[in-house]
Structures are given as structure tokens and as C-alpha cells.
Image (cartoon, rainbow, N blue to C red):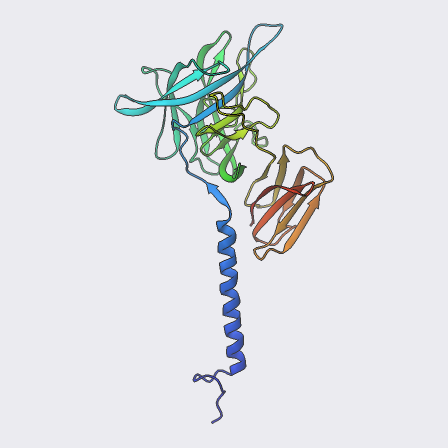
Length: 330
């Protein structure tokens, strides 16, 4: 009986060699994938209620006509305190530019499920402020602290609908982002909650319909350990007011929502004026460019553009890289 040479199993040497080469390629590919995945930082699940953070909220303070009043509200959390056997952190607020004087502004806590609760006083009933563990298509009834008229504190309730969940690049780290609509209108994203940061309408606040007599809020700056992590690109107010040298507002940000892509998603570039030098390029896991668009701050991405899989994108402007990240096509 004639047997194939090169093996004791009757496998031709040529087939065996091809098999070994294929296994070698698979191992190399797996190693490349691991290296690519390790090159991106993700920050999901970090706590909000810690003592090393500072928020600057911009407030459009309602006053009788003819002119509104504007201000910047600084929020931080300090010492632990026990209320009815539950541990809270004290909330402090300041309107001073150098924030040397702080006033007490209630109590806040975060549970293991990343639900954030707030009390205006020891005797007050705690209310759900954010739920950073909310799942896709959940309805979430929450409260946001607001003021009325000449600063009388009040709590108003609103129920949000989780439209989609994706991530947002802040500095060099991706943070989970929960995009919320109202039950009355599920087509417009009214509110966004960011892991470890809170609401894009400012700490302690959330989206409110424009009722006459109520203040409106937006997040201006967010610091952690004295370092600016997020800054509104349209503002010049993100200085850390404690003697630390001025910190520049972060550069452009790139977001994709929803991500993973199931149908149509939008890639949006903020902080860069729209011009022909903007280029968005997608690469597969082997570093091969498979999709490219130029000249727009917002592009649509659909399942028709790319086959299902994991891709990495790079956004450049004037030959400078302004954003990178990962996208999944379902």
C-alpha cells in the first residue's frame, strides 16, 4: 500500500505544510487583534460620587423681564455622613470665581447598581437623579434639581426612555453614554448621561422643558483630581480655580451613535470647523483601509457601507489626528 510521505497519518506532506501555515496565520491574526484591542482605553463602571471631582455648570437664571441672569455654578462632594444608617456624601456649591467659599447643598449617594440619589436636606426624601445602569428601551423616572424665580429650590420629575447606548471619547478614554428621549417624543435625544461624569446638563441637573420661571442648565467643565476631563468647546471658562495653572479645553471630539451599528448610525465631529481637510477612514482588523469620507463634520454609516464586523476609525484634519475609536457593524 502506498502511503503519503512526511506524516505517520497518511496525510500528504503538501497538505500538512498548508495546514501548518494556516494555523500560523490564525495565531498571528489573533495576536494582532489582541494588540489592537489593548491599544484602546475604556472607562465603564467608574463611580460618580467621589471627593476628587468638580463640575462647573452654566446656568441661565430666570428673572423677571427684561433681562435674564447668567452664572457659573461649581459643584463638588466632600465628607461622608450617615443619615438613617445610609452613607451619603455632602454636596457643596459655590458661585464664586475663585471658589473660596462653599455652601451646603444637600446630600448624594451612589449604590452598587450605579443609581445616583440626592437629598436636599437630612429630612428630605431621597430622589433618583441618574440611573447609569439603565438598559436599552428602559423607562427611567428621575428628578433633577432646579430653581424657580428667585432661587427657591424645587424638585421636578421626568420619565426618560433609553433610546440607545454607545460611548463617548473624553480625553483618551471612552465612557459609556446613555442617550435618552422623552416618552412624548422618542425621535429627539434630549438628555445624555455619561459614565463617571453625569448629565450633560450639569451635575444635579437634567433636561427640562422650557417652562417659564425655571432656570436652565448645561455642563461647562468637569475636573477629576484637578485635571480637566471635559470642557465645552465653545467656552473659555474651564480654568481650575485653585491656583493650578490654566488648563486648555480639550480638542475636538468624535462620537458615533448608535454604536454598534444596526441600520443607520451617525459619526459626528465636534470642535472643528467644517472644511475639506476633514477625513474619516475605517480600517479592518488587519489595518487595511476599507471606507473613507472627506469634507463633512457629520456622516451617515449603514450596514450597506461595510460587512458585519469590528472596525477602527481615524479622523484627521489638516493632517492631524483628532479622533480614533472602534465601531461594530451588526
